[in-house]
Length: 331
Image (cartoon, rainbow, N blue to C red; front, side, top):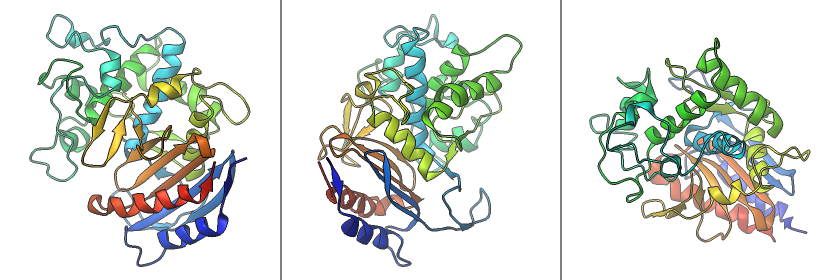
């Protein structure tokens, strides 16, 4: 049976939550092994433009940022498993029919190989499509904004990490589950709640939507650290929740961690809306802006969730701490 050195893990947690921590600020840490919580620690959230700060507790919901992309992957998996979406068929985007974009498939989108122009920058609003989409002219209909971008490359040829791509996928999910007489937002919210969050045990999860009623699957799910850990644990168990309920199809986990590209900047590999850690074979993770991580290491039956505020240039310091937590676990 895998085991965790609690003393070693505790020292890492102490370092993460130290007032002068080198990586920035940690808000929550959950280390789960074999389905049981072994380490749980909470900090204090500063005031931000999104609301006032204060102590973080087990029931505090925190922003996912791009960890939401992996949640979008789960939503797609449910629909693929039911035969309602096809990975290799042209993506069902009406505006692309009869254009040079009509050969883009859902698989291309999930692999971030659509060929669409998109600059994923979180600082320079003069060049960032991401900032323009989330906060500028594209914010009211994010999927339409992303889908309207020009095609820079043939679909499937070039990897380009893009939050816009995920919001196109999120709209496809919403249109697939749409029902007559009910808003797309309401049907999508019900689908996420009833088919994904509740079965996975994520009862705190709150998805956010744009004005057009599309789930902002690139960036906006609020949940507790424990619920993000339950999501990771569901994927560790190949799509089954803790009580055995099947949430996503068996094998969808392997779809998530099938290699697509290597990101030289971060040092991670990319699969399908999930990242992989090359030094931890078989691992996969949800990564989000400012140090949000849900790392799944199946051979150690380990799920590590970190939520916080880490500047991009200090990310390697945080990642080193998370690797130390993994090193404290034996297979």
